[in-house]
Image 1: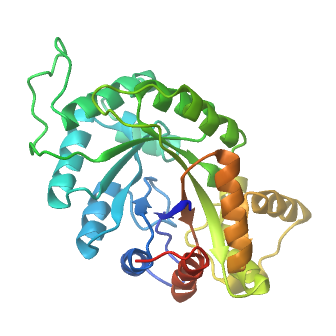
Image 2: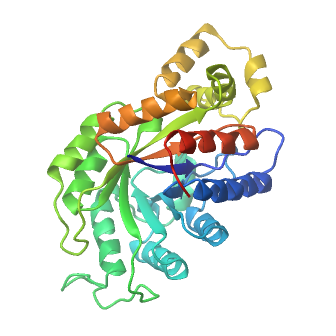
Length: 336
């Protein structure tokens, strides 16, 4: 049976604060751990008012401390903004605090608008083409295995520990799959972005994977998708209207400052073009009853040829959000 995990962007729901949103995510992490989900990943986005955080490594520390078994990780760290050495230090410390439970997902995207990127890279010379070398450097730091002749081969990424976080290269195109296959890391495709070509990307990765002699790992791929589940199809579609309006705003340049309530989404004055956009957005969503969601997720797992799916569930009602994950867990017969 395919493994299921969680991707949480920690939206601030309409009428609530960032602090309340973070508390809701903590409760969700505990609830999904109890229901047998494999991982709990948090994303990195900058200067987006609807999101409660921008620093996944800090939130990972909190969520890992609030749970005991579920793997916790980044989906992901936007590596070109940062020093590979500092990222390795941060995640080695997380691994030392929570051995065997930390994932480092890394991506090449900026994770925000150009102004945020300028601020993050102020006074730095950044070349996104060095991303593969940054990933290899992190592998070397994690395993005390920087190659001879590397300018930092004698450098320790403290603390020196016997275990290492799992490294995942993230992507929403074939280029991420190519890099992950070449470097011998795991690979995660952001299916919920709606970018076409995901099946080809994951299949390329699976078919062209090269074993990294330091990691000595087999190919491992997964996707992240958006899924909303309720006891009835009508209720699932009602709950999904909040994310419809949220992502409509992102797509049309009318970014919202919160995850809207169902009432706000219902009352919104949609244009004919808005309805067309929402119809397109819905084509990449998994929405329905437990049986319907299970069938669609299993089909996606087969289509993408992956062994794991991370589920993103932006629902305004915090209890309904937890219930969505509970229903999916029960449909798959998962055990905590």
